Length: 234
Image (cartoon, rainbow, N blue to C red):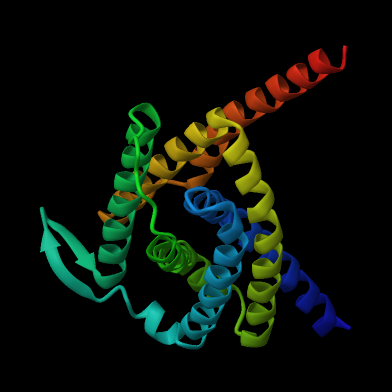
């Protein structure tokens, strides 16, 4: 009985942790797929998340390697940089670049831009896999720290992948239809990138600050949406 209670507690804790840590991943997937033709968006989400899930399993079963990634690589400005830190710095810098570039293109859109669907499709899948791996690194390490039940963690990851597949489509539709939501999401991605760079440099900033900051503009946008909807119904 005690074993089952512990398993339920571990499952609930891991599930809650995965959902919270997966918010930024959903937003990024929505931004990536919004650049694709509508006919390819769902396919990109399925392929990207499926491949990312396989990679997550590989990361999970190599958890001992992940936990040893704190081995010092270089010392920069009196800060010891490990492989794990370098991963966060490079990934965070990419997110900042992606955010700034997308915001620039929103303000100054390129005209008559020819789209080659296949390279953009493959690039989108590659970005989904790469960002999912980067953002799930803490999730994997945290999960292994909470329990040694590898099967339970794998089940949680699989459940999250299915939920993310459906939620990312809804988030993508909202981002595609409402430009202000897209701008908020881009700013969030940029802030997340800066936070990851800071974390890689040894500054531990709680992600809860970022989620709280994101909550206010989302609530305001939701209120505006319902005001617009009520106006149309009158």
